[in-house]
Amino acid sequence: MESAAAQETRGAEAPRPSAPPPSPLAHGSPTGKIEGFTNVRELYAKIAEAFGIAPTEILFCTLNSHKVDMQKLLGGQIGLEDFIFAHVRGETKEVEVTKTEDALGLTITDNGAGYAFIKRIKEGSIINRIQAVCVGDSIEAINDHSIVGCRHYEVAKMLRELPKSQPFTLRLVQPKRAFDTISQRTRSGKSPVEAKVTSGRETLRLRSGGAATVEEVPSEFEEEASRRVDDLLESYMGIRDPELASTMVDTSKKTQSVQEFAHHLDSVLGEFAFPDEFVVEVWAAIGEAREACG
Image (cartoon, rainbow, N blue to C red; front, side, top):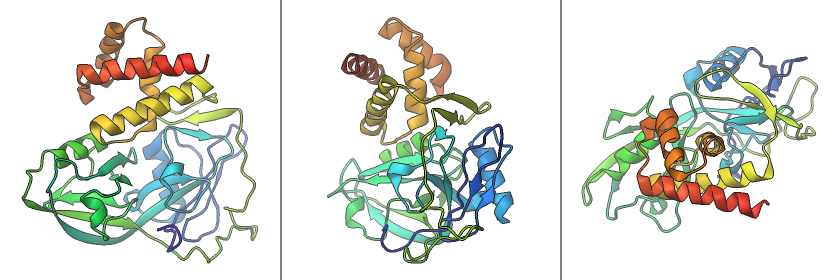
């Protein structure tokens, strides 16, 4: 996928107190300045405004890469010197799938602004055998039922609950791509992907609700614990969500026992209805990360 084409994106740096950040398109555009946003939806709106498109045209963003690279997805944190590339809608396609096994082999995430998309396809799975389905595709509808506006865990649940041995249809939107050999140009004539990118000591943390905050770079423990929790989210729920994992790790710092942790999770993340065994696993994973990092 990466060698075929990189969809159009628009990059932006995280906003600073002193200067607004630049932003280019992934399939090729000048760099723009984006400022005045406090959460993901506002970021998308500002990028869309800068490039004269609708916010709904943006499927997802990647950091410091114009490619459809799921390892570089924009999550809940942006380094103050990161470039943001916004990947926009390309072609729409429909595929028919017959669920011959309980699991389709999909990992779902979302962009925080209404679109759920495919982050990972398990090798050898049902979906892996359908060449038209690709990592980065946004899931727009299941059996002609629009799922735009649904969170990733809701989409994953719908797919899990589809009956076996019965065909169903997925309507997908792939990111717009351009050939990787075409250089991305900024107003200075330099490619944004060739620009020197460094990590600051602070990051901008974006939340689906509430204002963005500038925070210290996550500690080794926080990064390791969040990674382990995100892995558990994938194995239990079929989703990946670094922001959600980070929120769960933050919640654990305020608690002294798994019972207290479960109570706090219910108060801040009750809509997920996490099963008890999952909460116990998360508590254990965070404890193991703490021990591993000293």
